[in-house]
Image 1 (cartoon, helix red, strand yellow):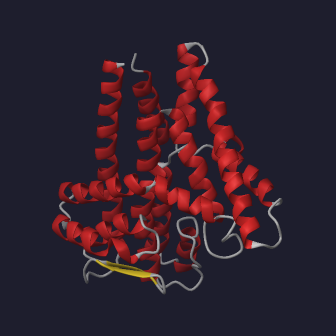
Image 2: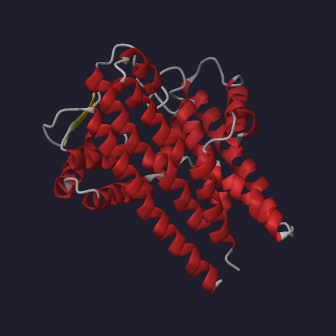
Length: 308
């Protein structure tokens, strides 16, 4: 029986039609609150103790959540009830419509001449300070997020669903949420170091797949696919993250623009101006890349259903 295929298609349809659930019904929002509660137990000093505490939090939370849903996965339930339950869980491990809408809000604000509002919407996309960003820097941040989050928010969760089933997608979302909340320099640097490194490992393959999909999508969207390939191979190592540079450089090359986070990286994909059209083109490439991945994952689930 092609249960996995039904769950995948149902989750994709739910994301396309409904988008994100309100926080009070969203498992990732519950997870965020649970992580916040755990952070109150982190030692006030001692980098080694902070690291061990952070590592323990990630391992135990991932194990508990995954084992719980694995139990649900293995229970002998009514097939229809199980599929519907699993569709909702899988949908909440990824968000394509939410990403597209977040980028769209930035573009809409800029098109209306409201740079302050655009900066505010950019906060939902990047971790950098946005209060003083120029219009070009806001556009760059939106496009960078569009490229990078293709992996984090869509390709990676479905990759682990295809490889490990629903528990795999959930485990990835748990680790990625830890990384988003504490996996950066500053107050939680040592507490979040394990989560950040584990997230890098889990996204190693999905990030490179995502970059390849951006390259292929560039050809479909009549963008600069040759420059996308060259930028991806030549500039992916310029970011601190071992993964983010792949997708962002591929997108920069495809659009013929330079994407830059001042003081962190500069991905030179060309000298074209950063305009609202560039955001629109990045959204088109995002949609095409996601469609390519959906076709691949759907094919995998069909094969699993036939051979299983």
